[in-house]
Image (cartoon, rainbow, N blue to C red; front, side):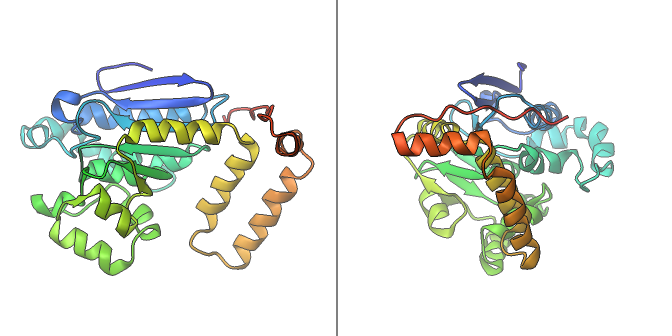
Amino acid sequence: MSGDRVRISVKDHVAEVALVRSGKHNALDGEMFVAVAAAAEQLASQAGLRAVVLHGEGPSFCSGIDVGWLAGGEAEGFSEHARQRDPSGANLFQRVATAWSEVPVPVIAAIQGNCLGGGLQIALGADLRIASPDAKLSIREIHWGLVPDMGITATLPRLLPLDVAKELTFTGRIVSGEEASELGLVTRTDPDPLAASRALAAEIAGRSPDAVRAAKQLYDASWPGAGPVGMELESELQFGLLGSPNQMAAVIAGVQGTPGEFTDPEPRV
């Protein structure tokens, strides 16, 4: 997929999704909302995929809403998108963040520069986040007299205690990548978050795709604890993996110390 907002490339079972509005620090306008949501939907059924790296070209991951677009009247045509909801209950603006959970493989967000407001909410939709120590992250909506409304109620509770989430939301203060890591807002920091994300994606791509997909499904369905429902799902998924070709390939690779020879599952339809 190519365009003036998002570009997708796939190599060695890893997809890279780049936000390509670097002159605007990848700020979100109507075209960007549509393109990001479409990218996630495309990858949800991509054959042979084992990991995704999501990043922004240029100096920033995503600086949030394009205020000029919002104030210039162009956003009025998108108001209907806010009222239309998919079966999960999400509208278009929420799907740019929540749709990444529907991609059956791990999604890693590489964060540099500004990651503010809607940009942070997109990153929160990823499974993992690697940020540069000096990246700038903020739940920024209070700065514009708004509340965060891009699926943050589905993503942030899994990462932060309520009081910390409230403090960041009430103030809109900017935290560094280093502080974000200490808070649990990002997974870890690295001076080169894109290179680190690519390396992690390659490592994940070398594991059994069946087991990785099952692990994502298990945690997304049960975290932070689902009691008997979670226990039942653990067993159900495990029984589906035991003795399967990819599980046996993982055993052979582990015993012999060689790369696993895995077969990718059929894409979802």
